[in-house]
Length: 584
Image 1 (cartoon, rainbow, N blue to C red):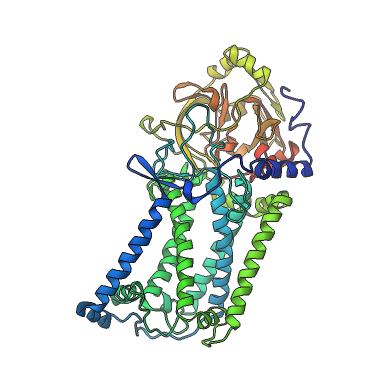
Image 2 (image 1 turned 180 degrees about the horizontal axis):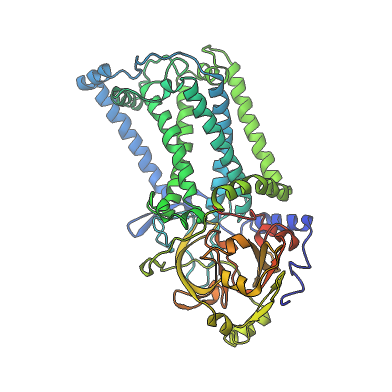
């Protein structure tokens, strides 16, 4: 078999301690000071054709806030303002509400805070891997509406992985650079916990009749909320009994929006970043405009959650800190420091867990990966694995730019093949098959050819539409006739992985039989460019980009991917602790 030797995943699997040290060295230590860190001065938004630092927008926000306060004070002091406030009480008196904070609200409220801290921190780490936000599917550099680092260099090949930025562990989970695999484990683990917690809350809310405190049922609440807003903006806090008794109108509308609009929006836009779902149901991402708009909305939802929490705590502090905390931690309407003590304890536990989680991420990454594979991986399979991709696009949809990724092969074998226009190239297909073959590019082109225009989804967050031409993998399966116990297929590349050694990955036979699973030798009507995998690359459209092995040298049918490499499914799964199947 070609490629056997140093770094060969079939006979040279690295030890777990070695991989753990390699990961920490590559993602944390060696990146220190080399790549830019996230900072406010590097965050820019595009206005027209220019990018403006958000640093310069902060003074405008301060001036704007001052103008709003002044306007609210002036309006509230006028006769019309006083009449409006009197006619629209900030705290409505109907419908009748039973005072109190149920135990299930206390528990789910505290759990929600704990979960959201982990989700947001891991979300920042995921964003750092491709720190650009777009409104178009194509993700062409300089077309983004917001970016967290400067423009890409024009004097060399600049891959999407090169573009990632470094994040401090104080902000990101786990911190470092290109730790997206670990961040996704934390993000999805706590996403699932967040959803379960939210469902439990809503079920109990309606089962106990508590929804009457939260869901607006009278149209007059709009005017009441506007009255509240004027009073809050004028820094004249309305005289209210507190959330233990009932919410004011603005609180009620805000809490309703966060629970029944913002949270579902965050979940639904997250699903819109699933290649399995988008490439099956093209209409779904269009509910938000497209996949990249959904990603931007997802980011906006995160900012809204953070902003809501900050404002929420500000109001808790300004309207009776001790009394409010007693209500939400103990369910009592009293003024003492018991609730404050419990709140401090909850903050301490959250901080302590985050410190532990960062340390655990760097010292026991494989354990975290296995926990995630056994939970998140099973949920993903249940939700997305049975969807065979079928969405296709038109030629006019092809992206003008397709981010390159991966290391172009440097071996003498590949260089020689490339210089000879791959006339001597032979694709070796073997393993658990009845008919092992070696196929030249001429052989491959002589077989049944399929063309498809599909959307590529990278784990980093960018997307692109390309036209691919090549051999349907189902046809290759027919030719080699796999043995009954061959359930997985390994793909080996001429290229190296980021930490050295041959790049490889695996796919299930189930996915490879999908109609859009393709051994592609053409891109956009031309032979594959070098940076995109010539002479041959894989397309499996229900999976993310790192699974689409480029520069394929060999294909091997196996019982299970655990038989190769370090047993996790592929190079990035072994070395960077990705999930073995990432369908979102």
